[in-house]
Each structure stands twice: as structure tokens, then as C-alpha cells.
Figure 1 (tube, rainbow, N blue to C red):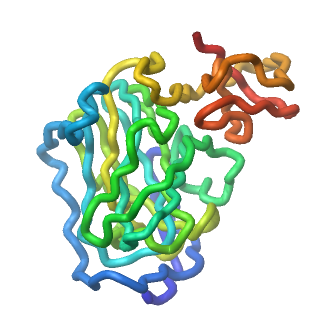
Figure 2 (cartoon, helix red, strand yellow; figure 1 turned 120 degrees about the vertical axis):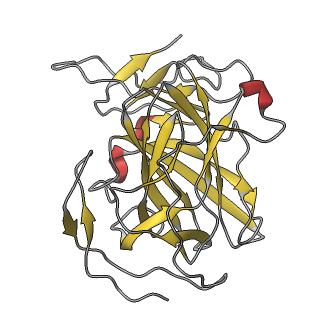
Figure 3 (tube, one colour; figure 1 turned 180 degrees about the vertical axis):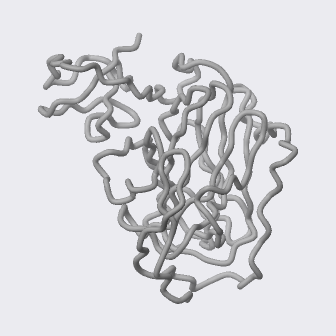
Length: 282
């Protein structure tokens, strides 16, 4: 178990120079203790890696961080910045468990920094039950388990990947401003560790161990049975659009997507009496 760290960086959506307090400690009860790893080089971006066989129908690409772990708890938050228009579909995670784990995925436009405890500001992309593959091995979450999210070129998008146990593995980092993994399509930054679910970061910067699966292009909903794509609308000043209070007859498809995560479910629509910004898709 690592000692309590008394300071961790605070950053704006693009840059930062000061630090904010950290709380708690990582729970490191399994797996080898390794020397700190060297950040993946980013001076010469690598070519996006095709996803594993069986997902070729979506022409998936991937960006991998590391599975050289030395710490663990429940989950990680991290940012990406898209260099071209992409759609994020799924992830592979790193757990020391070989039992069934429930994986949850959330997203937020902008940076996670300062938003770690703001659960209501995050969009749920859904959850999935997977069998852990153990320390050092990727645990794949099948494509179609989560609602996909489109990220426009130049946009910073935060992700929160968590399990409900404390079996998630990750690696100590050095700065939230560091790009750990990069290719021609996106940069993936160091992030933080979070105890389940939401709350203040644990310790200092942490490197998410995993693989991000994505495709290039626009935001049209796929026709292969995967869930519809979340698009994050830009709120219009003074927009008082009425909010539906009953679910329409649109089986398993969200024809209205909401900025507030309480208003949308990965495999169907739920509706809130509260005021949400909505965007219709067809």
C-alpha cells in the first residue's frame, strides 16, 4: 500500500501549473510490484492499430497504453484529445481478477480534472459483465456493450473506466499534462485513480492500463446492432425546449439524447422532469 500523497496537480482543460490536494490511498493487494515505468515515447506517433479479429465489421482501430502495472484500486479517469473525428466504441481493461467483474464507462466533454466528484455531469455509456483475465493480460469488453461516443477533431474528452471491486490495475504517473500514448488520431493523457464510484483522486497522477477502441469518421448510428451514439450537444442560450415525460415507442433506440447522464441509458431512453439539453437524431 502506497503512502498518502499530499499534493497532486490541478490543471485547466488545456494546461496547468498548480496542484490540488489528494485523498486516500490506492489499494494494492495483488500483482507484482514493479519499478516505475517509462512513459511511452510520443515524438514519433505510431500508426493506429487494427482491433482484434471479430471486430473488423466496424473497421475498429485501437490505442494501447501499458499493462506494466504497479498499483490498483477501482478505476481511472483520463482525457483524450482527438486529432481527427473519431467514435469511441469500447475498451479493454486491466484487472487482477479472474472472476466476473462489472465494468462501467462514463464520459464527459472537456477534462476530468476538477470533475471527479461531479457524478451528475458525466454521461453513462453503460456497463458490462466480463470475466477478468488476470494481471498483465487485457480483459476485453465486447463491442456493443457500451453506447458509442463521437469526439470531434480538436476536442478534449474525459473518460471514467471503473469496476465495482478494487481489482483494477494501473501504473503510477508523473503529471496530468503528460501524453502517455499517441497516434495519428488521438492523444491519451495520464489521469487519476478513483475509488468506486466518483470522488476525489487517490494519490498522484496515474496511467490507465487499457486499450481504447475507436473508428474514424462521423456520428451516424451503426447498423450492426450496437447501441446508438451519444452526441454531446452545445446548449443554446435561453433554450426552453420541453422535455418529454414518457418514453416514446422507439424500442431500444434513443432518438433523443441528453447532456445530463440521468436522462439516457445505453440501451434505451429514460426521461426526466428536469431540464436537459436535447438533440434529436434520426
